[in-house]
Length: 300
Image (cartoon, rainbow, N blue to C red):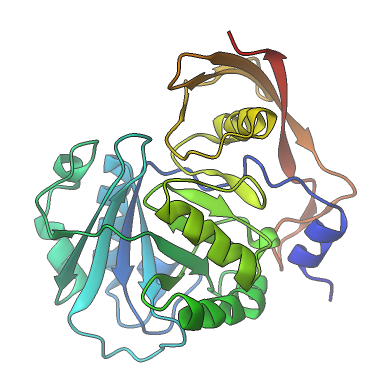
């Protein structure tokens, strides 16, 4: 059987504008076996508790995700590490705390924790993190491609890498999220993953292999990357993206602003990819939508 990641790569499917959308991330250590629906189906995690965490986090702008150290599958980890991260440009922050059980998180008001002002919960975490999607129950490509990458990174950048349950875009495996900036990358190898992490340590990002910044919607992600590639801007917090103006269901006008005052207008169109193929292993054949950006106006 041909995998979704093989087909995506073979047909050179564009990755820009495919990152999951989340202004914030709630990362919860859960080393036991993961289910396809990680928060509500994983062994050792009460589905009612997991579902409520997921619901409350999403309402506040956080995407709840389970994490574990590479290669670790035991259920005995205690206390458990939690990261709370906000990704907006110029207002990124990360906090690290420890909990005894996931239920402890429900004592907190996620809405009060969200936003540009870092909360007092936990302690500041100043080093970038890289999360590699490895959940084979979600898609086998994430296991076969993601786990070897995570293990290689654990040797090269110890302490900075975690496995994650779901980052979307299985067909771009191995895929990874770099925090706190929120840039998501696909089709990585150990060298390109380390380069992305090192860029984040200097306040930068890489346009190569980048799927987009999770802060923005899919059209906005594609527009931002188009401007970055046009002017070779790699500073992570140098661009801001306004809310896209829709034109029907498949086209948007997006304004991208530079902190130096320059502004661009980008037209983005959602285009079905061909030939038809599954977006994920085990799913029906279809035509994945790619975001196709076009710069309409130069900087002014």
